[in-house]
Structures are given as structure tokens and as C-alpha cells.
Image 1 (cartoon, rainbow, N blue to C red):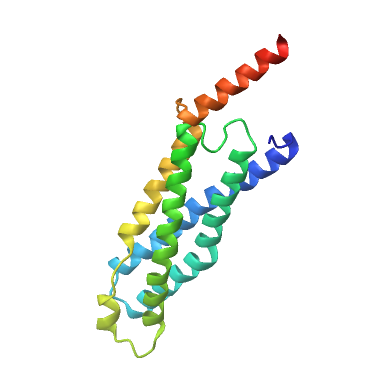
Image 2: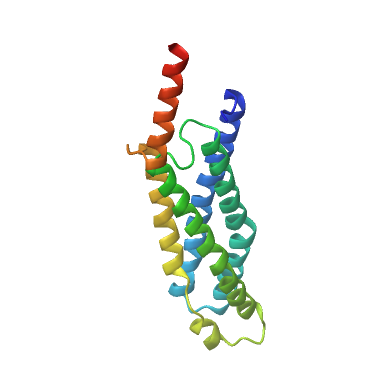
Length: 177
């Protein structure tokens, strides 16, 4: 079911805004994550872990979910479809994986922030807290891959896409004849 042009442009604008925002928020998160590795200062460590939790829960998670949902809605309402082209399908799968890992990892970040925020946590315990940098950088790489796929839109239709295209051509030729 095609979406009207004005609505499609609005949905696309929202999708682009939240997707780019997701990338930007992950960049801010990575900055704090690097800080947890680069410093021994207790106040900075506490602030970094609490900041990572705050950015993760209130910015990254909502942007990720909105990006996933808006991407699905746009794909279903345009000629690209959700399962017709490999680049759309791969983008969808990567976004689902990134969101699932994020939702799983955010619990770890919240636990680390709780430990860091606890005044009874010693400076040595703060320094010993683990980093989530591998997940952060991995997430950024995945988001970059999705971005590249969506900009370049490499050719290649799925079997489902070929079937839909053939059915559409057959229907057109029947209407003409």
C-alpha cells in the first residue's frame, strides 16, 4: 500500500532525523566510554558511568526504537518494500540486531551506573569497573553499515522481490490486453 507523497516525506524526515540522532548519541556515548578507560579520577568515572546510563536510556534507546519502527513503516509504504531488496532486508536485520544488543546492554550500563553512583563505591572499585567500549564501537560500525546501505542502495532483489515484480508485470500485461 503506497503512502501519499507528503506523508512519505514527513515519515522519511522523521526517520532520517532519528537515525542520524542515534548515530550522534552513540558518538557522545563513546566519548564517555573512552573517558572511563582514560581516567582514574573518581568524580569523572562516576559522572561518565551515570552519563552513559542517562544517554543510553533516555536518548539512544528511544532513537533506536523510533528508527526501527519508522524504517519499517517507510519500507512497507514505498516501492522498495520490506523484503523485496537485499539492501532493505539487510538494513532491517542489522537494525534489529543493533537494537536487541542495545536493549540487552543497557541493563549492564544501568548496573554499572548504579555502582558508580553509590557513594560507598571506592576509587579502586570505580577504576575496576568494566568498559562497554567494544559494544559501543561495534554499534557505531553497524549503524555506519546501515547508513551506507541506505545511501548506495546496492542492486539485488530477493526471491520474494522477483516474484512480486513478475506478478506485477503479469497483472499489467493482462490489463493492457
